[in-house]
Image (cartoon, rainbow, N blue to C red; front, side, top):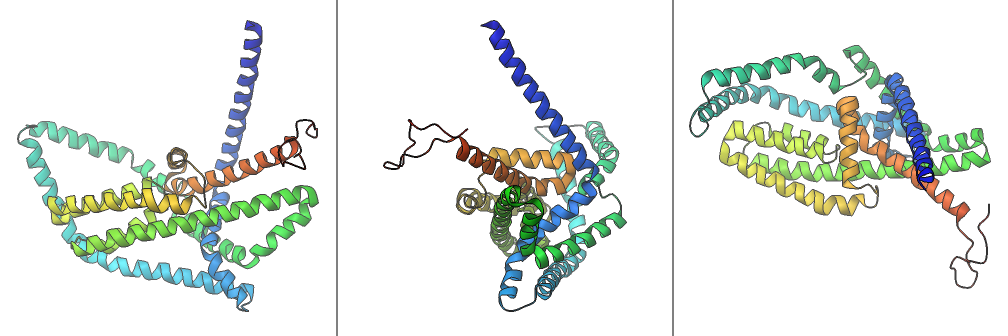
Length: 366
């Protein structure tokens, strides 16, 4: 009895060690080729967003290369227009916001020094110095975490250029990639690879489009409230809210907290509380209505899995990892589901021709 239990435990321990070793090797390979894998991953994400208009143009007799070029140039024009729209707003309101930030910090300092906290000046100064020292010592880590693996401005420009080129070719030649892979890999494995990639593409496209809809609703609702309340940098905060929505759970929280902070500094405590209430209401609408209705069709992942994926991706690869974590986990889930389906198809007993129930008299094929 004890020997059988120990043998069972040893087998499972070996399985866990083998899985951990495989995960470590895979992580090492990803880290080594991250500079190559990052542009490919970003290009696939952007291509899923731009594929519907590209497909519409090709259906209306546009050559694939022209359709891809028009879609990509339109996307760049939209992004450039948004940047051109928010930069003057930041330049105009940044000095005023900095002055109000100083005043807000002084008010917080006075409140901390008063009752009931009664913190002395030397205690506050030592705490501030410790925070400043911590930020200065972590400055390199914070900067590297923004774009892990692409540390210099030149590398970032090269990566951006490579992403744009890859997006163009994915849009132009995407429909021909699967048949080509099928012919290269053969009829057996090629059929499975083609089926998996089709599901992955559909899942990834559904996820990105769903997040875009949810992020747009968040940005419009919160942005309208910020404009009505005359909060500084309302346009910038709306854009940040839209972008943050593509990082599930964490991005919306950070964008909402930033909106409340700017409202507190720029307009005072009352406006900040109103903005906080609006942000909470919008996020409740998003979490309880929009995402369950929309994402249930595109991605079957529990909220705990999403949160752990974002946390792990952010800790390993910074903001980029947090952005790509959920799509990667969704694609892994698609692959695992397909493998499970194939195993069930092989091991499941044949159906009774009369009742369509598993026939216990017939053994499953070996």
